[in-house]
Length: 529
Image (cartoon, rainbow, N blue to C red; front, side, top):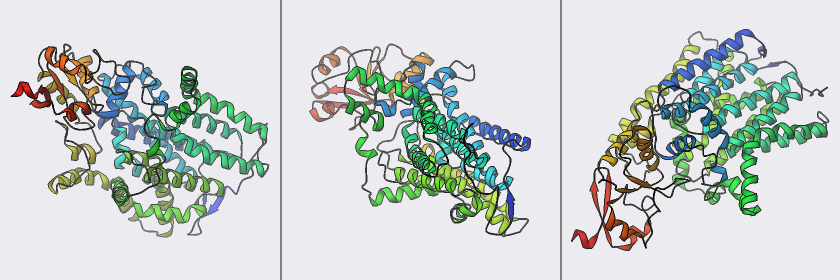
C-alpha cells in the first residue's frame, strides 16, 4: 500500500478570518461545472480558430502532420513528437478542411487548460466566482487565446501541465503518494511535446528529495515513478535514441534534444537589453489589460493563507518564477509565446486574489465588477490594432507579407478571418510563368505547398526551400546552378531580403528583382539592361 503523506488541515483561514472547506474532488456539481467551462471555452476557440492554411511554424506543423513527419529536421527540441502523433490521429476526422482540423487541436487543448485551471482553483478556494474569474482571465488573455486559434504546440503543453498541477495538489490533499505516479506520467508526456516540461520537472525533483528526507516517501517509490515518466516520455526518448544510434554523437544529440539545432545561444541567454525588457512588459500588459491584474498581486501575498499546503504553494511560486525568468531573458522573435505557462499560473493567483477580495469586502456589486473586468480584454483587442496602426507603432517585424495586416494579425487574438495565407499563395502561384520556380522562405513555403496540395493550384510550379524537412522537387539553387536554372525557367523569390532569400543571390550584384504580383522574379542584370 502506498505510504501516506503528512499534510496540513483540510480547512484553513484566509486573511479575513473566514474558514473555507475545500471542494471535494468527486462532487457531481464540480464535475458538471468543469465540463460547462470546457464546452464554453472550446466553443469560443473553435469559432475564432483560423480557417485553413497558415504561415510560419503553424504552416510547417500542418505540413508535417499531413506527411507523418514526426521529427521535422530542425533539431530534436523542435520535433514535438506527441503533438504530431495527435495530429496524425486527428487529421482524418471529417470536420471542416484539413487545416482547420489541425488548428482545432490547439483550440481543444486550450479549452482543457482553461477547465483544468478552473478546477484547480475550485479545489483550494471553493468558490465558483474566483475559479470562473481565474479561468476567464486565461481564456481571454491575448497570447494564450491567439495560440488556441492556430496550429501550435503550446496549448497541448499547458493542458498537460495544468493536469500535473491538479495531480500535485491531490497528492497533498488526499495524502497519497499514488498521485505522484500520474504526475510523473503526465510530465513525461509534456516533455514529449515540448522541452518546457523539464522546468517543472526540476521543481518536482527537489520536492521529492525533500519528501524523501522527511520520510514521507520511500526510495523504492521514487524508482517506481521513473517507469510512468519513461512511458510518457517514450515518443521523445525514441527520437533521441534513434538520433544517437544514427550519428554516434552523444554530445551533439543531447544538445539537439535540449536546445535544438540553432537555438542554443538564445536558450542560454543571460543578457538583457532595454528593448527586450520594455517589450516583455508590453506582452504582459496586452495579455491582461484589465484592473483584475491587481488580484494577481493580492493572490501572491495571500497564497499561504488560502492554500492549505505550504509545500504546494511553494511549488506554484517556484514554477511561476522559473517560467517567468526563462521567458523574460529569451531572445527569439516569438518569445512572447514562451510566457504562456507563466500566464497560466498568473491566472491561478488571480483566482486566489479574487477569493480574498470577495471575502474581505462584502459588497454585492463587487463580483459583477470583477467579472466585467475579466471580460474587458475583448474590447481592448478590438481597438488596440486600429490605434497602433494609426500611430504607426513599430511591431518589430522584418517585412510586410502581402495579405497580412501585421497589426490585426499580431495584436488581435482571434484568427477566424485569417485567410491571408490562402490569398497570398493563390496570388503568388497565379503570378508566375508556367513551370516556374519559387524560392520560398520558412514563413511562406508551407502556405504555397498547401495551395498546391489541397486546392490543386498550379502544380506545375516548383516550390523550393531549405526549411526543415521540405522535399524539394528539384535541387535547391546554388552559386553554380542558378544561372543555368534562370536560362531554363522563370525563377522567383518571395522577398529579396536577407534571411528570406539566399544570401549569395543578394550579395553577388549580378541579379535584379522584378515584382510580379506578391513575388519577385530574378533577372540577370545583363538581361534587364
